[in-house]
Amino acid sequence: MSTADSSPAPTTIVIQQKESMFGRYGKFLIAALVFAILVIVGMQAAYHSYFNTPGGPQERYYAGSKTATDKVAIISVAGTISEADTFIKEQIDRVKADQNVVAVVLRINSPGGTVTYSDYLHHKLRELATGESREGDAKGKPLPIVVSMGSICASGGYYLASAVGDTENSIYAEPATITGSIGVIIPHYDLSGLLKDWNVVDDSIMSNPLKDLGSLTKPMTEEERHILQTLVDEMLTSFKDKIKEGRPMYKDNPEDLDAIATGQIFTADQAKALKLIDEIGYLEDALARAAELAGKDSTLEDVRCVEYNKPPGAFDAILGSAKAPATKLDLNTLGEVASPKAYYLHGWVPGVLGN
Image (cartoon, one colour):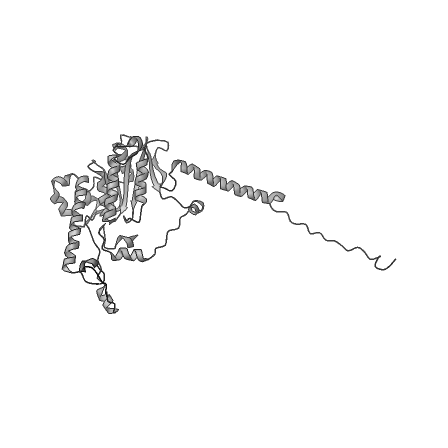
């Protein structure tokens, strides 16, 4: 026998793979877990879509009975009133389509906004109040509106408050509310001195000298000032007409309204003395009054008070938070600032910057 044949056989080492925490069926269990999560998320979305219009304002219980069919809806007006913010209109549309809503509380916390959009929303609220825009069995049925003012309800905010019409005891303000500021402003900034220092010349070619009315690159002429002042005066008259519709006492005494329509702001106590509001109270007081106007118990035992949230995005629903959009300065924003625009707004900064 040779030396090679007598050598021992080589040792074989077998390394056994470590078993996963889920055992031999780990991959299957992980896949099943992921599938279950997807099913739960889908069921939750289906559950919410049963009560909420997909993509629209999401209804949420606020107070009162959780099981009542009849609702008092809280429509929120927060921040600067601007065409860029469609959420107020979306809430109005949601209420319009909900036949179970028997009354509305308009919760306003706003310094005002553009003349055009304030007037548009006022028009939509009045349609809601008269029942003109409601759907189904509620068509033509008046919907009482009560206002609840937050920290500030000024200018365009007060313009919207007048949508209550001549309903008695329908405008509430909190003790620390600031309101009033009845007036119109067209912001204008003369940057001609600064441009001169930078040796910048506006050499625009125009069909008429009035084409660049309100331009930032030159001082305002007396003719231009007269034109803009006329616009402001007419818009103020429209503002006061809306107030007279919501505050009938000023129809018989228009001079009293003229005396306070100076752009001045008022405390809640001052506003009540001037009859700009009816009562000093909180949101709960306004909800009780709205229920009462709808023929319900003011204790809210037979109504469900609801509010509306903006619909979350897909990732917001998973993460439970929404990322605020970054403020950007683009051509549209610059155009908003540069173009003459009228505001029912407390303050001098254009609403586009406030947003």
